[in-house]
Every structure is written in C-alpha cells, then in structure tokens.
Amino acid sequence: MPIAAALAMFLFATLHSQLQAGDREYAPVIPGNALVFPQDYGAHPDFRIEWWYVTGWLETAENKALGFQVTFFRTATRHHLDNPSRFAPRQLIIAHAALSDPELGRLLYGEKTARAGFDLAYARKGNTDVKLDDWYFKREPDGRYVTEVQAEEFSFQLSLTPTQAIMLQGERGFSRKGPNTEQASYYYSEPHLDVSGTVIQEGKSLAVHGQAWLDHEWSSEILDPRADGWDWMSANLNDGSALMAFRIRGKQGSKLWAYGTRRDAAGRVTQFNPGQVEFIPERTWESPHTKATYPVEMRVRTGKMEWRLVPLLDDQELDSRGSAGAVYWEGAVIVFQNGENVGKGYLELTGYVQPLEL
Image (cartoon, rainbow, N blue to C red):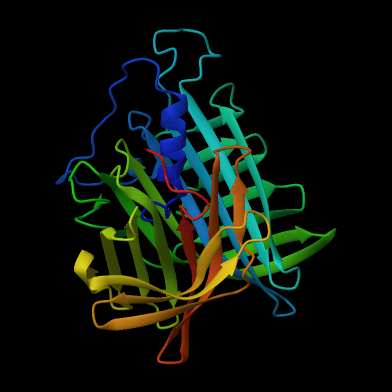
C-alpha cells in the first residue's frame, strides 16, 4: 500500500488517540537513508507503526478464482516505557486476513490483536517473522515466505516465492505521503510472488496456486490533518510488469498527495508525481453493512496510461472495529487497458465510512 497499502495509517491514527500517554520519541523517516537487506525485512520497533501486507489472487483446480489478504501490523505504544514487567504493552500486534469468493458473494474475514510478548505475539528484527497466536507470516532463509491463518469461516496455509527483485518505492525506499517531507514512510514491495498452498472453506480443502503482492512499510508520522482518506492499488500485470498508485484525499474532495510507479518486465522503473496520478470513480456500491458508498470500479491514470479496475465482487468491505477501529474496502480487481484484460490486483479504499480524525 502506500499506506496500504494503507489501512495502516488509519490504524496509526486510531491507536495514536488511544496510546498517547507519555513522551516517547520515535525514530524519524529521513530521505537518503538506504534500505539494507536482509535486516530491513524484519521489524523496526523504534518506529511508531509498521505493516507487512500481502494481497493476491488464487485459483483452485476447478479454475475458481479467489482473492486473499493477510496483514500484520506492529505499533509501538507510549505506555510503560520504564516498566520492566513482561506484561507492559510496549508493542501491539494486529492481524487481518480475508478471502474474497465470488460464488459466496461477500468477503470472509478475521482479525486478531494482542500485546507483544511471551512468544505468543511478536514482530522480530533481522528478518520477516511476525506471529499472533496461531497466525504467522515468516520469511525463510531461501527468501520464500510462509503464512498460516485459522479464521472462523476459512483458513489457509500458503507459500509465496519471489520471482522478481525488490521494488523500492519513492526515492530509493523513502515514500512521501503528503506535502511535508516528514509525512513519509520507508516502503518496498515484492510483486509477482508465486503462491501455492491450501485453502479450507466450508469444510473443503482446496489446493490453490496464484500470484501475490507484498508491501512492507514503517513510519513514525501521521497523515496531513486535512486528509479524509486514501485510495490505493497494486497490480501484477500479465506482461510481467508491476504497477502501484495511490492518492490521499482531502476533506473537501481535493487531492492532497498522489504517487505511482510502474516497473516493466525488463526492470525499467517509471515514477509518477502527484500531478500525473488520478483516480476517477466509474461505479459505486453501497454497503448493506455500514451504508458507506465506495467507488468500487475505478479508472486510474498514471502519466499517459489509463487503467480500469473492475472488482471480483462488490462486497469486499472489511469491518475491523473489533481490533483496530477501522472499516475499509479491500478488494480483488481485474485490470483492463483499452478493453483488454492486462492483469490482476487489489484496490483499497479508506475514509468512506467516516473521515479520518487525526
């Protein structure tokens, strides 16, 4: 996400209002700092908020299409900094997972939250290794990711293998999120992950394969206080290229900030500044759950190119008020260009139930 990719900044805003006791100093996001791997695959506990965010498309042996999402968030609190107790909630871990099934016609999702500690919930430094009870997301020594989720209505166990190099977003990983330079995150993506594994739904075990997109982002600064929400998309395109774009919406409908990047199959990167990125609603859907209206079908312009995003199904709203206080639309979309199906991706829409209150 940018912010995913996104929800994370809304989580950040929500948690900020809940955890503002104390005077903790957080590490700043500074332009020019080079990301270093493998250590930057891991957690950065000195920063305020961090997330590992995976979205993708799966296919069963019967050629049934499914969308999936799994996201782990880490947030540093302001509480009990000097308390030596292992029970002191210095870090919180939040996890969301979802499955989009067009035959069912609605999103299946689960959520968890816990204070870090006792090897039950953690985000470890040095390499990707995040866990919350029996949910986890981990990077193996060979670079492959493994994840397992056991939700009430579904479960999955997936392996995700990189096929392309890391994609640094913004200026070598320094990603602006607003008109002020402090409104930024460190941000990289891994597009075109090959996925294989098993999904269990309605008591049936389904072998699946597909492609996914991973975002890893960390920050200490919230959005511009004028922000109303954001729209974000990523896509694994059929020709091997990768596309990401987002806009941050102002409270009066203005565009506060925007950014996009496209890397072609040969590795050439084109970046798009705020004036070159537009999100244009084509069709809306009213949620029967929250009565929010979402622009679920979009045209996205990046420079001279235009992309049309069509949802796998309309009802892909995720209500995470049980963990993070946020409601957002997170949906699998088909990407069209000039009427031709050119790829698959995900669209995220936040701030439509109510404006962000930062």
